Image (cartoon, rainbow, N blue to C red; front, side, top):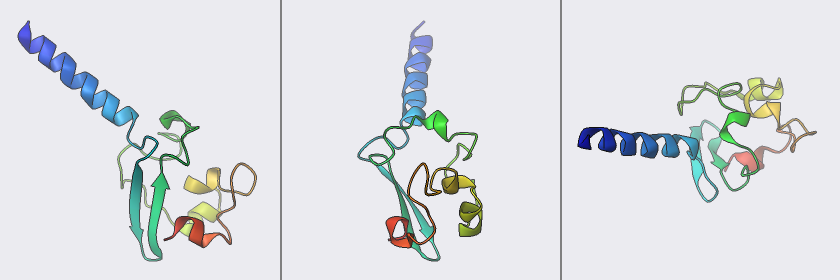
Length: 98
């Protein structure tokens, strides 16, 4: 019985961590040839994880090989950052690349 309780607690902790991988106040940083790109949980707080995962991005950090060409073609970040739903990635390099 004790073992099941411990496993249950561990599962809750693991799933809670996955569900809130980038909560408000936290950031993911990607090193790119054009500078660091920061994904800010505060900026994107109005979206749930399922808005982008796994339909746009894979679940595991680093599994997607994102290029600016892909983004400009409306893939990955470009799904939203197209100038309609969010600012366009084209011509706004410094908004993401620091």
